[in-house]
Image: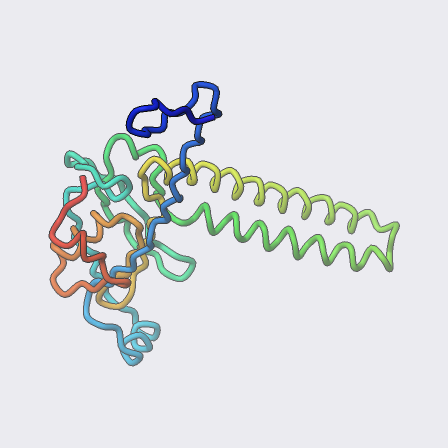
Length: 222
């Protein structure tokens, strides 16, 4: 229990008192910024682009790593922004040596995993519904087994990637990077505020949502 020194009434903690547990700091969540490069997209331009095609103008990057925000020392890594409808040449993105192994080179792996999950769930449901009518059908049992295998593999990959990304995010990396082409421009998503500042500085007219915090204006986070 607390002891008094008998003089000025100063309280001294007892050596037998239980230690005070440290206060846990709240987990900081990274804001995802959307940077639009190029002139504003109108419905007419989007429709014309779908009909006759359009030109891409990808953003000019700065010197900081797109993942961790440190100086990339001139190192770059190709990122493939192609989709199932668009075939686009890879774009060189600044990525430092420490981030080369975990920086996403494209979204193809995510697309494949999502497709596998859809196929697995749909195949499992279809096979189970028909097995109620034909329980001895070997083809349906094989379809069920393959669908379950695909679904479990897709879920396992997603869980593994989420675990790895959570560890990277806690150590200051921004793995949620995306680049989507659009007529006469591109849309980039990232949680790296340093990368956002580089894009706004090297691409006149670029727009970002949400707005950058006021305390970070004019500063470059290394």
